[in-house]
Length: 440
Image (tube, rainbow, N blue to C red; front, side, top):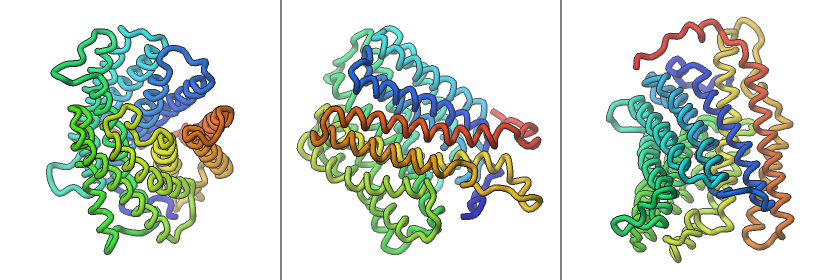
């Protein structure tokens, strides 16, 4: 693999500190969320621990990582300058304080603080969405990555509004309103968060990253799979709308289209990974896990949504598939991507000016590959154990052991990448410090 991937307009990217701040804060939420989840499995977590666990991991770790990655690579992929670095930093501060405060309020069961911190979270998400919407090129024919990102940004805006409504309802009951119950709003909020904001971003990013780093392209018969996956956003909208207004036929149709689009993408991803003739890296290895997990989850979700698309316990497909989706798909995508993105950003700003003048390390030399292998194995074993536990195959002690393995794996993963920043990113080139801010 080349030191810097070809075709990227790295002169358009914001300074290294912008996305790295997002990633580092996200790592803190990953560890906090893992700790709350482990305490919840052990039965010692206080208050609304499940809500705290979900928001620390999804709104904290996953969404902050997505926000940082999009802020960094939308300018790179679209060859445009980021609209405002100040707004990007403000969004990070608002979301970080909002998520931390919201999780604390959940654990303390402090309903009056829930909507207060929830409001900060909403403002942060809207600031991010506005910044990226202004960064995307003017209206034209978007490529697959840009189209998925645009859809994800729209989902971010709507899910934040629904989330604030839910937070406000905990302290001052406003639901049901106009025939819409809290359960229905939760269904729409969760659908747009997971399948809209998160998975749409994942699919858009992997269209670029998977083909770039396997040195393949989507062509020929692959286009049939891509065309099937393009229906995915319509499925998500239909599923969310059907759940919001309790329209079962619409929710069924949306769920089936969503699951079919996800399966088509899983097959396409697996095909690109198989066709690639490049050296395996932690990123590509984790993408292979994603393809398998997504292919396994999709038909299970379709079957569940065909039977009960409006049920609270079927929000993300079958109960036994929750960790398959959140760890096997979302978790491994984020981990795999960060195993390249963090070293890549550090490498560009630390070593690119020295290339050709002195020996410099490759991107994949910046982290410890033994730790990467260990954390991948631990997270895989933990996820499999938890899936078997939810399916009733593994006993409760095995589920607790799986949670511990998952937690240790996440700690090792975090330490490995934070180590990259500590060892290689502390001393920055002078050109970084002299870069002017974009005009707001």
